[in-house]
Length: 375
Image (cartoon, rainbow, N blue to C red):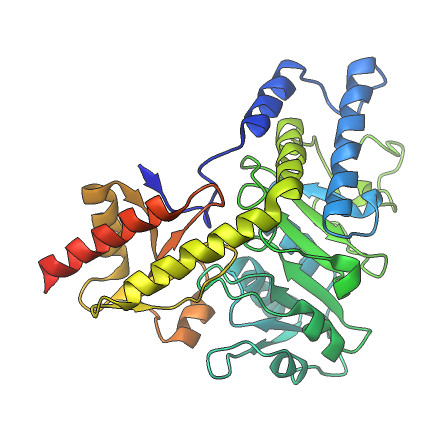
């Protein structure tokens, strides 16, 4: 199979990631929950991963790195743990449901208001986002890269236009591992990570990095291995946000994946820009298709066929050509409304940095054959 669904989850893991997971399963213990040597050794490995992630993303120190099972959980902690009744938030039309649904829940249950920044001439502009700020605005949520179009908003420009009091939350599900995200430099207060996509880790690996200004309350309560005498959650981070046993194999995979990203991110970005450019040129040359992306470092190529529904076309590519893509709305309904592709959605092919022109040409050849059959 030619796997082109990396925006959903990475289909190929580095050998070092696989080896780390196997080793972690062979030395099983609960990191930091006991005083024996193995537990202590595993806790040191967990701490090393916190340090590496903070360094990789220009973060605010290891104690401001909380592990989660995925990016959705990280986003929920940032949003649900920050906003209170009477607060106002800003999102954008490019956001994933992992941002939109928590905001909608708070709107219906806690009296939190939010506004959504639209596209202007097909682009998400920092000044449009800033125009939605109100006196009660507390949080602004902006994706690092759209999972539909691959567009990467300028977070530096967004931060520059926001009042200092407004916290900036960046959804790194698609951008992390592909783009150079610098929290301190860009003034990002929250960065939510999905380990299993561009970071090269396994499913179950995620993290929330946050600044000293951000003090989210926990959304899950339970044992932390610290302050066991206290019936309240610890007041210090990251323990305050990490109830229950951590997934040590997932954290080990994230550590190794981050090392790979650190060593080859620029090379991977250049390759993905070249590949998505080739796909764009190929699709644009076929009249029955319309592209909804530009060359991008996240490897995302979304398009439609004039006569075939997106999910049907995805099925044809899978069943007849053994090419894995995704059709539909990609859990981003407002993005499709903004693009005019709701409710039909789009076909999304998403490449990994390890892939290249061979996979791109295989996809284009299949699309060309489908186009001839439907003409």
